[in-house]
Image (cartoon, rainbow, N blue to C red; front, side, top):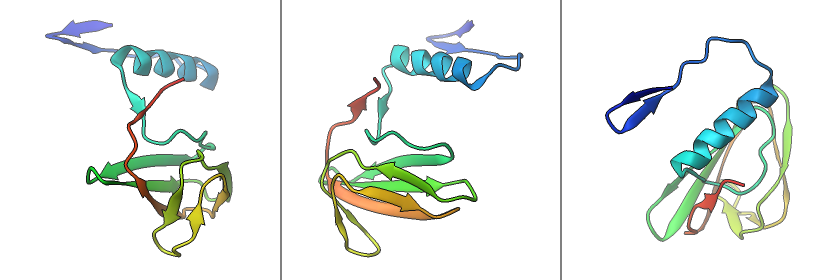
Length: 113
């Protein structure tokens, strides 16, 4: 770790297994006080980004894998922006390279577990 002003820089020059990276980045995120945009566990290759207008949260779920991915939503009521389908604890399937946008009432960010 290198300190620069009030920041820190890390350089990883070793090939490590995924479990190392999960622990390393998980601890880094915790120490930085970062919070999750979406509380559901995301399958490999799927990312979630959130945008808010202060009233509604827009969750962009993106599957960067060429294969379908399944996930259980985090329990907060939301609506699929394209289809209008109401969802809560639904199992959502993203086809390969599919993007879905969900909207829900604004929630505070979730702490990383």
